Length: 128
Image 1 (spheres, helix red, strand yellow):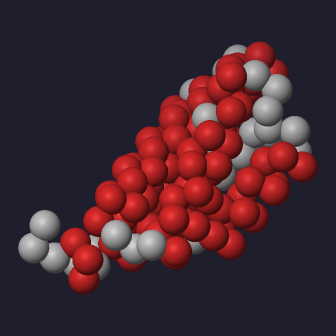
Image 2 (cartoon, rainbow, N blue to C red):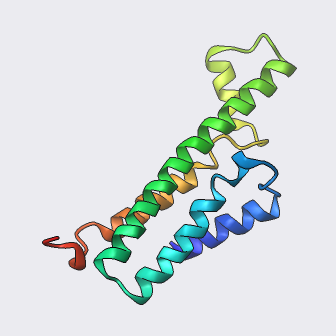
């Protein structure tokens, strides 16, 4: 989790993914993620595990929001360059476009699932 979050955050910062409020969507949960990962590592108590689970839900939400924003931006750009595109042809172009990569925010969803799987049946959460 930590390596995935650090790598994702570094990449976002290196590509300048902080120009407007929408671009901060993945960075805020990533910062919270690093804090809760550290907290769970140092003190795996019920409260820190629940906080970690909550942040993983934020990761998932940020991933879905990011996919939606990237998809919409690609659709708008492609309609400007080729208004005749629609249907499956448009969808193929949108998801294979690299600026912005429409499916890249899916990494946050994957990290969320990884984090939630860590807490699934965690011994400290049994019987709570």
